[in-house]
Length: 152
Image (cartoon, rainbow, N blue to C red; front, side, top):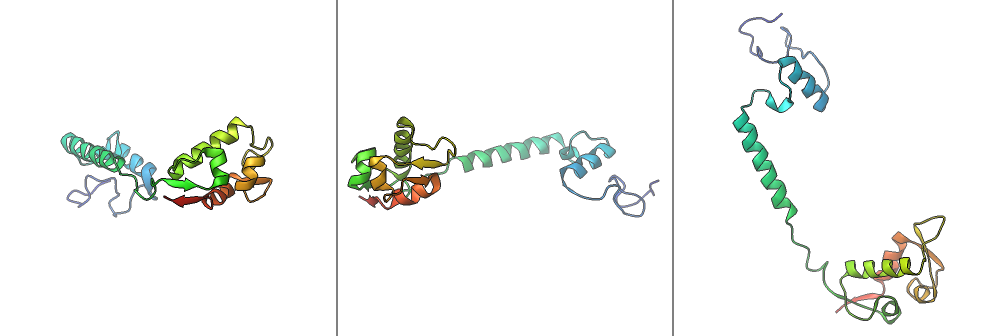
């Protein structure tokens, strides 16, 4: 039962000001909206024009955030050491390309461990890069490879 003139007359509240459903989040908003008769929580107390404007603004903001520029230092070409040059070539490459080329070499030669795919078994060329370790994890590999790269 609602009291006329109650400040929250259009909201899903009892006469004593307590919410019908406690809790929060999207599920609560959906319940509140369905009590009011709306099918979408965004429709509570908003016009369709306001929804269209806010959706368009959100879309434009998301689009602007997607067009970020890469960090110049991150994309700077790095010169590989002689040991690493045997695997990926002597040409200076950005760090991202170095990692791609190493993975191409690993997959081409079947150097991933069969049981634990996170480990890489080194061959003669990779032994020099990995510091004479016969097996390294893929996370340890990036650390070991970075020792063989210098800024041009």
